[in-house]
Length: 412
Image (tube, rainbow, N blue to C red; front, side, top):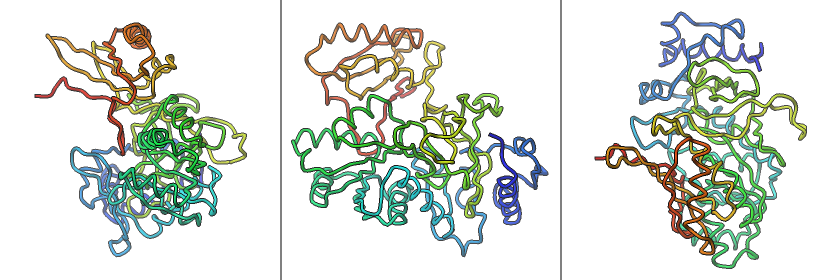
């Protein structure tokens, strides 16, 4: 899907703004002698931007609008390295709200719904993004924020929340608590808008079964507004994204070459109208593909597939590149397993070892299933891991994102 003339004009307006402001990217583009793009081929020659660039611009080097027009900053949720600071103008905030409201509408959520928001507020874009969209839509917002499961469940019942916004990890935890307490009949939830971490089919089915709700996968990242830049439509896993605000490319993660529609690669995003901190060809590290053709739902907005993983999720062990999605694919073959798993990499007796922890109920032969899982994983990745089977509920649950890969090889 080549960039349109209308989109090129918007890109040029953002390049003009960055050069005039002398922002971090404005200087880079000026030094490279690029101040205008005339064709799709010109656009594809523009340099990529990376998260490390954004860190180099700390604290406000990305700011492109005049400071008196900046009404807010947000920061990425990463826990290591220099934080990424993204400034927003009032128009940026409103544009984000419009995109997020579209997501709710795509999911069939209306102003009659009561939306309980459990992701965190503050510098992170999650909680406030879910709230912005709900308020733009005109729905009742219950801004709980993270944690305090006891209070979450009380408010959910007393206020008869119809929509839950959460990470998949916390939606699972809430579902398990509702089941444990036998209060499902008191809960009026109809839909769940789930974001912030990739989640597999097994987890999706488990949350759906426990809560009895229709689930929607919302997409976004702090550097590009936040959550709300795309969502799947009812009955499909594919996510529509808002191409009047964003231009998406899929590139080969190694070469950076733009790939044809339908091929898997890394999502690269250009913001077309962002004022506070526009980004050109930003490498997200998320792996997906563009789905060609029109959607049966009737929406004219383009689509991408579910996020398969991240280029930086990759583990290298025994000289083999392994992605968590490959492990998930193997585990899906075993209906007796829960959706939870954990991968631990360690270095023992001069060699790397992969241990996979999985959960199941107490009614299966642990030794037999661990042997079958190990064989299934080997068929996907080429070597045999150590599989440890534990009872359901033993692996940690999280109110935020669940850490599934723990690399202990380089720890002191």
